Length: 216
Image (tube, rainbow, N blue to C red; front, side, top):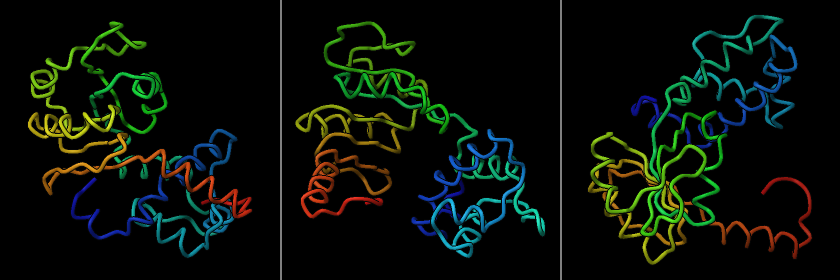
């Protein structure tokens, strides 16, 4: 995805595109060839104007009058815009329960992410499915040699910052952080934090406030 384009679109619109993609693929699998912005808007619980604005970010060809968007073409345009058509190699550090779960999840391939190897201080098993598990002392050499730019941290919070430093030094440009700690990295490094405790707190609070139903 072009960096200049990214700066000129809203983060809200960008975050909605994967949801459009999932819906469109479901409709394609059901034999639907065309969808109007009104139908998509109803399914996504948005206004048709918002849908048109969101999709205009990615599409190359506008929808046809009375028919709407060609579903297969729209899927390809969104995948190309998001970079899902180009597999992105990644490395993972921290092969505990969470790390193993992520290494085992084959659905990442649908989003262009390919976790090629896992690293840990102690290697208790040689591989998870087809993903090799290597000692952490091999991290820098392999990551630099293979020109990997995406790193995933699934260690404990005590080790996370040290691992982040190692990733930056090895040329990692984007870090997906699952450790419950805020990382300190250079401004040009992209960090996406997943805070499981915070998500659970939101759910628990919603239950206690009787806010049942809908999305949070």
